[in-house]
Length: 229
Image 1 (tube, rainbow, N blue to C red):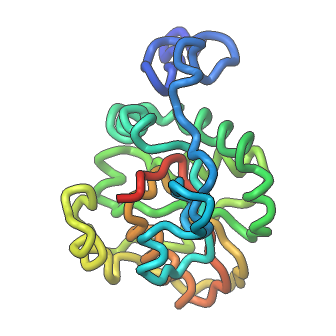
Image 2 (image 1 turned 135 degrees about the horizontal axis):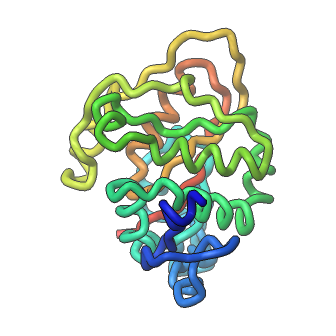
């Protein structure tokens, strides 16, 4: 009955789909997986098998240990925009299903105590009505049994939109953006979950905050990642 009132939508073309499918037949091959070789740190595609890291990871020290991403951002950018800004929270099921199908063994190898979604500032949460990273984390958790800890990391500063800033300003924009409240849970390995990795500034600042709070190792998983510039 609920599908008659709120029909399920294809995460790529936004058309109505029926049955158990999470994507329509016409769109199934549109999202492009990140190809090998990948950066051993952030998972961006590399142009050569003879190098191990992208230029950004070679140049800048990262606080996270390693990360993985499923799709090339350009192939799913409209989908992700609708997911976040056009009230399509159900797309999280498709993203998580594909993440676990293709990257599940790597995620298990992280041996994580918890999935931690990148938090939204309260003002953005109220405007959107949901945290897209939390929805993805919840769906991954259902499939892999790794618990989601939503309140381990909090966003205390309302930062400017990262996409409107250059690389240098993105780093400055996020300094002190996150806070890790004191709690009695000892976490060793955790996985940050987000929708997109562009420069990685958001994930890296979140990882720094978690490490400062006593977490021993931080990984990440995202739906999509941008190209190396």
